[in-house]
Structure formats: C-alpha cells, structure tokens
Length: 395
Image 1 (cartoon, rainbow, N blue to C red):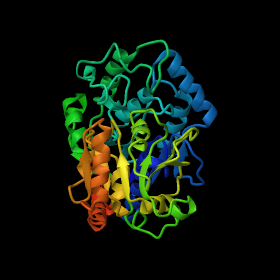
Image 2: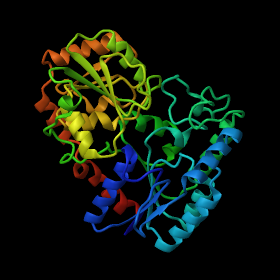
Image 3: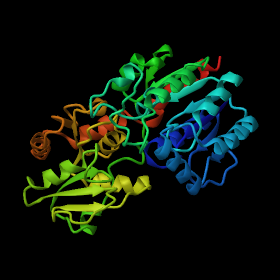
C-alpha cells in the first residue's frame, strides 16, 4: 500500500511533525510513505516540494488582492499531479491544504477522476468555511448557512479588497463532497462535533488525538534556567509568536503585573521581544524537538491562554515532559487536561489564569501525574487507528 500525505510543511511545526511521525509509523506497518510539502528542502525522491518562497509570496499576493485563497498555485499543482502520476498512491492523506501552496480545484478533480480514497485530518475549520480556519473566537456561525459578509476577511488568509467567502464556500463544498470514499479525522471531539454539522458530515468522522514521541518529549536534565539567569525562579512557560493575537500573548503581559518577585515568564517563539517587562524573557522559535523538551522540562508550569484552538499539541508535549498545564477553556484544549495534571481557567480571565498558576505552585498538581497523562498520547498508541482506517478505506 502507498500513502501520499499532503501538508503545508513536513517535519517541522505541529502538523509537519504529525506528518513525519505518521510516515515513520506507515513504514513500520509495511506501508510506503510519500510526502508533498508546501515548502522545505529535502533530499529524497519520495518527498515532493510544491514551490519556492518567491512563488509562494506571489500567490499570497493574489489572495490578498482577489480573495480566492486555494484557487491559485496552478503551476505548482500541475507538478504535484505529475508526481502523483509517478507514485500512483493508493490513498491520499490530506492535512492542511490551505497555506498558499496548492490549487484545491485541480487536486480534488484529480482525486475524483482517479477515484482515490482520501483520509483528511482536519487541524482547524478551514475545510468547511468560506474563508477562515477559526471562527470560535468571534462566535461566527455563517459557515452553517454558506458564509458571506465575512467578519474576518482581513484575517488569515488575508483578503484586502474583496469578500469572496460565499463563492469560496460554495466551490469548496462542491469539490470536497465529490470524493467517492473519504474518512475525516479530527484531533478533538470538539472539532468532530463541528465537522459532523458541516457538509463534511456526509463522511465518517473519527477522533484521533494528536500523538507525540514520548521518548523525546520526556522529563530531561535542563540548564535552561541557569543559562537565562533564572535560577531560583518559579518559571511560567508560554509559546506565542506575538503579544496581541488569538493565541493569547496579551495575557502574558497582564500576568506580568500580578507576579510575585520570584515568579518569571519565559515566552518561546516570540517574534518581537522589544520593550518586554523585566519579568518576561523571550526565546526564538526552535524546530529542534530535543531542545524543545529541555525548555519544557525547565518550566514549573506551562500556560496556554489561547482563545481559539482545536486540540493544542503543545499542551500534550508539556504534559509528557512532566509539566503541569494551565489552559483556558477553549475549543478542544481541555480534552488532554485532567484535574490531576492541570487546571482549566476561565476563558479570557487573567485573574483566573493567575489563580490557577498559584494553585499549581501550591502543589495541587503532580508532575508524575503529568508525565503519566502525557504517555497516553504516544504516537503508536494514538496513530495506530490511522493504519486501521487506511486498511478499511482501501478495501
């Protein structure tokens, strides 16, 4: 059996690591893995890179000017079709097909014409909306009726001038329900419930939580505190790219005003670290999972104040490293957290967030229980269900 995974990235970031781990598991189960990645550089004939950075930027510009995200990238998709003709996959496994790298009309027509079974892992809601990957934050339910008058037109994938959400929705629906055999996978029950209410509900939907390599994400010796001059501090770890987004970066600024003298915030992946309060330290993003495990292990608590997410892989990674998690009651974020390994704070409430951190500091959560919970999300334990789905859908 040959399985082609298609995703915006491969081997890096959350969805790229999932695709990589799946490819490894496929090989172990006698399945030949192939990859189509939106970007990157790989020395393997089994990995097809869709386009270079300049070509991708050109297609980003087209989306911003005309608002038809997913319907450009024709040249790159023609090359992908040649690759698919060469490898002749038995199954196509889709991940994120948004991200300015593929033409969905050409892709789904190829799938329909060749009657290739599809497994589609939804990492967000983009597949059944006319524009956005997330609508939970603003409480929008236009996707139920067909979109239009999009309140997030200027959000990713940005459209500067035109609201094409109604047209995009209609075409996406027509394309996506044309597949003869498709199985939808979601990382959380929360997203499963939404997918079943959408036009994708005509297909079977299965929850498979995101799996991680628990041999890598584990409690390890770490000198991160010493290197950063934070020895003796109660270290609060967060992962955000900026301080004003739906991922909740702004709450760390608010938290900094409430902290005791011996409490300190460490923010990973922060793009702009200028003008931070003295009790916040920033680190650049790392694509090294081993370095990431060291950073997790140094923390006393992991705080995830995101305002929209489908499951949150970072919560599971922190737990597997033995770190208690404090998270808002957002989307599927709470599904990995139990009262033995973390605390759920009131969404959008900084005081509730800090009170939850204090409860962790007072010993309400055991690091051993966190590691035990994290072990339940091992790759083989969670992803073996994919192998079963492959075998079932290929019959």
